[in-house]
Amino acid sequence: MIKKILHFIWGLPQNIVGLIVLFFTKLRGAKSEKYNGALVTRWRLSSGISLGMFIFVSKGAGEKTIKHEYGHTKQSMVLGPLYLAVIGLPPFIWAGCFKKYREKHHRSYYSLYCEKWADKWGGVDRLYY
Image 1 (cartoon, rainbow, N blue to C red):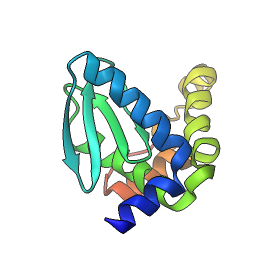
Image 2 (image 1 turned 180 degrees about the vertical axis):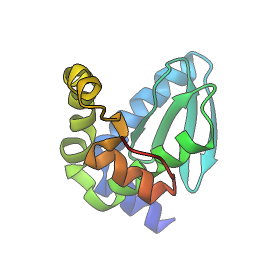
Image 3 (image 1 turned 135 degrees about the horizontal axis):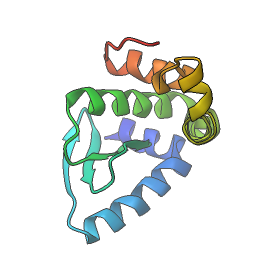
Image 4 (image 1 turned 135 degrees about the vertical axis):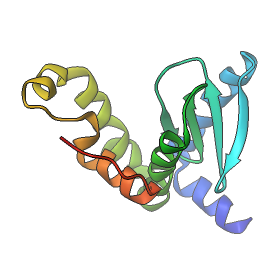
């Protein structure tokens, strides 16, 4: 219990955002389940995101996606207040601004350093191109 409280405080910025997102997803009837101490919530969006101890995935997401997002949860536990800058922001830029670059150079979204790292820590095997 003390470990969870310390992790929550250490990752306070992303955990607060996660609580806010959880509140609004619950208002819309989203269902949640526990996964290795994190709270996984299935929402209407097709993408996944990890905000500290809160993981949000699509309704049809499989185990691979949950494991990947849990890898981000582990990153949050290590990086604490640096998580949003080091792990949270780069994928948004990579996905939003570099799609044509990735297509031209045959680069997977998951080839970005923080996504590979999340796969490794979540126990996900994936081919990167």
